[in-house]
Image 1 (cartoon, helix red, strand yellow):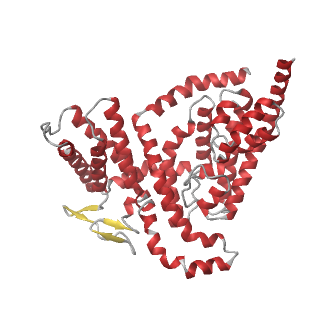
Image 2 (cartoon, one colour):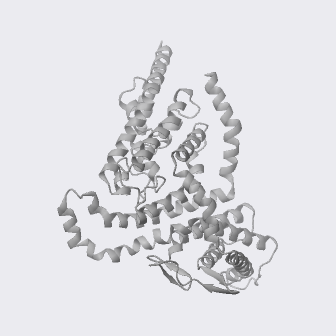
Image 3 (tube, rainbow, N blue to C red):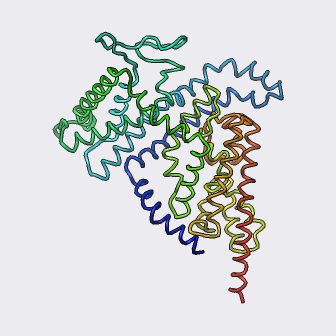
Length: 451
């Protein structure tokens, strides 16, 4: 108990404080909100992609492929437009939602006359200004007209089922440009660098003129940044890809994934929603990797809703098996009641009733398996994916999708559904000796209370 108490004390003093402050940062909160706002669109676009490759999941049944070839495949170009307009334009959703949320936060918490719509449109302008590819040749700035053999570039705009940089490759640039734009907008408002219209002018017109000066400030700032980088032989997309590319590569290693889940679970056991903090930074990488898997056939592990598909069946901590066990096999009346109340939400990956009711947080008896179970299941998933025993995650699914179903929809692979069931079982085996001991302890306490 002393060791566990020491662990909780260490986490409270050295982890909970800094991470709590990080979670309250305006930019982090805005990134989290932007990620959530983009999810419905990624799900819509992903499902059309899954539909187009569904026959591959039933390759053992040729009649399915024949039916699709004679019907739906003839309309692929029509319905896949929904995929190009969502996953193929995801950076636009990110830059709009992030800048809107960040502007709203500054306006409300600093009491500034900032319009979220203006912030969103200014950021969209800034991002689009970074998209065309320009070179500096013989003292002249010129748009790129060809990148490589087979590439399509029109006046600097690389095309790939739409504008290439509007897709997931532009997510990180979209995030940076949204933040920079809103900070410039905030600076203009704080220094009253805005055009003020009389009160008699309609609000819509007045709002548009309020964005006039900030618009020029943002435009000139982006032009200067673009110009300097082009002279140096690069552009903002290539510059930003260096640090973010390193981070993306790190997250797709086994060590990187272990760090993700170790930090997430350590935060949870001291009462902080670890997934909200850690996955605010992981989700943009996961979305980009999912698109790469779909386009190039890679097996990047951190992709889409991989976590809910394979790692944390039942919710953070991978508690589905634990919940079912205490609901139907526990001897303690307390555990049995909590388990039965939590089992339906757990099927849909919602386990707050279990985490706070069992409880798991601040509970020395269950802290160790709560930390270890997701790390073990993530290990199983990582190596199964790396060895290509399953198809990669190529589609986004709603995070509450039950175990097995989500894995199948996200990969169009029946083997993935089986793997998700295996990882859920593995997680339960991690919990089993600990929950048995805890159950016996509670039974003893209940009997003492009765006597």
